[in-house]
Length: 268
Image (cartoon, rainbow, N blue to C red; front, side, top):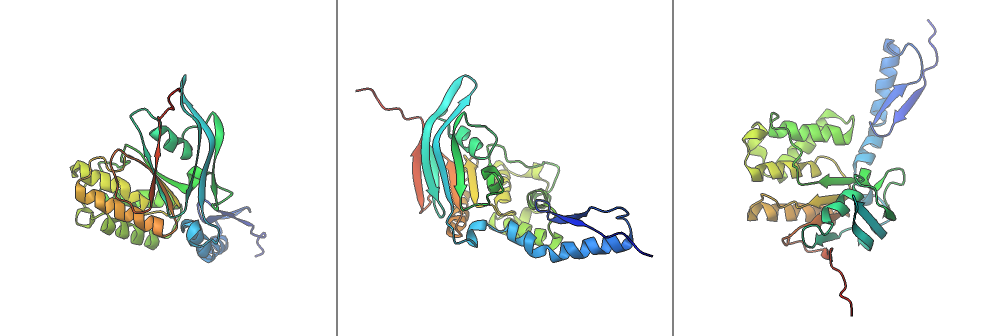
């Protein structure tokens, strides 16, 4: 029996092939798609590995004359800054100064009124937000799922159709680094506020993104957990990543600069 030629297209985001031919349910077609997907595993791992760890070009996050409006109020006006790989930029300032607004704009949730945000050395085919982890005030966990199941969800969601063994290894590493291994089978509803925050931050570790955007990451964390978070951020920076964090307290990071928002020059 002669079958039509099977044409495949690779889905870069979901890391799998899909067929462009009829009769794709035929066993030979299914076998061909499975083989092509296995051969594409190096592509998958390359895309889920921080680009900056394998690129000779250093990452540089750049904001040029950024203006962001919320409703009728211009929150940020003419903001320019640069942050390079291996560096953390701490956003400080009073409530309402625009710290969350800036992070959400970089993540792609808000559209600036003017100016530009770019990530030099990143993936030119992706927006800056697509190359970022954003952890906001909400922990982003489901109370009815266990600790491990929450991390497994984020790992599958953020990595696309990745190998189950790879996902499990990532989850186990996140559980260990966030000191949640003993709680992995406990429903998230029974965690303390600090444990829930650590679980929410754990998604930073189940998928590789070069840019971390952290909005008040220390909320509900005790002193020991703040040190734990600082060590994880430092490891990310040492690997060539970069981070922006809105915070009211020092994080104890070695390679960090401060960008204070909401400060206006006084008239002479």
